[in-house]
Image (cartoon, rainbow, N blue to C red; front, side, top):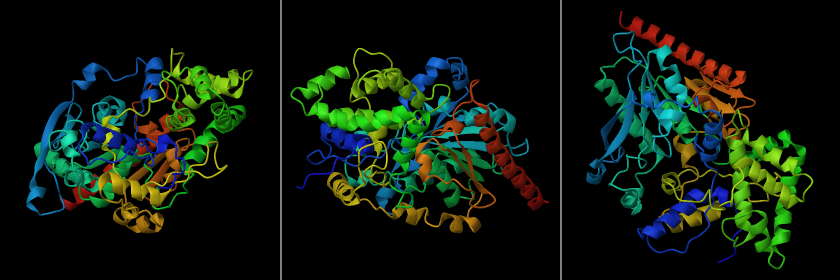
Length: 510
């Protein structure tokens, strides 16, 4: 087999971890572990960002008493919505959570339903983190609903994740089309459950969930009146967006904070390779970076650093602004050598620890286990295009690896075939309506987002300083004015949709 071009671990860890996990539990045929192209984490949650926020905003977190207002339900969900084969009628329990504390009900002008569409994780953390629904329910008298994505949390078919991922057939039901069909079935059930036939539904999602929200509005306009799609990179498919879009914004974020920081990072990769090539070079790097275990190669360290920089940029949130934290450490250590300055950046971001685990971002989780090859997002970078080493996306290799791991090849053009993407303004100018695409322009994934209005009601709301999914997170006392204004703009648009809907409903009922 020909040697593979180096691809940063941060770009392929969901698939690599899935392979490792499945190998451990021996539920797949034996294969040699292979590096798989990895896209940067597409999620509104991040452990590093959450820890930074909790240190500085202990009083802003939603209270335990508020969580008591949520009631958990389980819906008997169909495993396959698109086939009439006998096995398609199998069912599983899908979790959804409801807060009716502020709901005006059907009798109060058909109060709306705000529904959060779960993404690639259990919904437990979303209940507190995604504050947009909770913060605004009192003013809209809305019913709050959180729906868990199939194959996550307590909504795993076939009993366990191990069983669900056991073979091609059970894995095949794990895709976005089935997921949004699940949401359609549950939302119609909720309308019946709460006698809310005429209550309009606004769906909300962030990151992958934001893509689902926008696609849900396009596929099920009879169920959702509108969608708020936060940080949804729906154009990062099929080469609509340049491969280097993501890492170009990461680079821009660091360069805007500090030219010295940017230049130091750019020089560091060659310096790490130079030191690693020395006798006992890996021992030297292990000591300089205080790694918890000895480095096996320089790539481990470089992958760790690449992940830190990408995560810091993607979740560059107030009040801490992680990119600024990293650069502050690098700049303060400017009297030292390149290696010393890079390590100072880690300490500034991660805190002063006895050691630093190079595998922090690589341990299997339910999120990483669940990802498959459906979302073929060609994220890469060429030579001297960013502050990172070259790592172009190789579609041929990606297809080969998915084939070896899952027994089926990915379909690189299917997302744009099924949901659209090419010539999106022409397509949605007449066809689509009532979608807000919100993006913070410091978010690397905004490079694949909708950044201009596509029609009068398919609109883009952007903020220059915003980061990934920041607008739908819980409001805080420390929120800057630009973030408050962004949320207010989104609320005004949603209120406009509701006003028009109620007028149409009244007219039709005369």
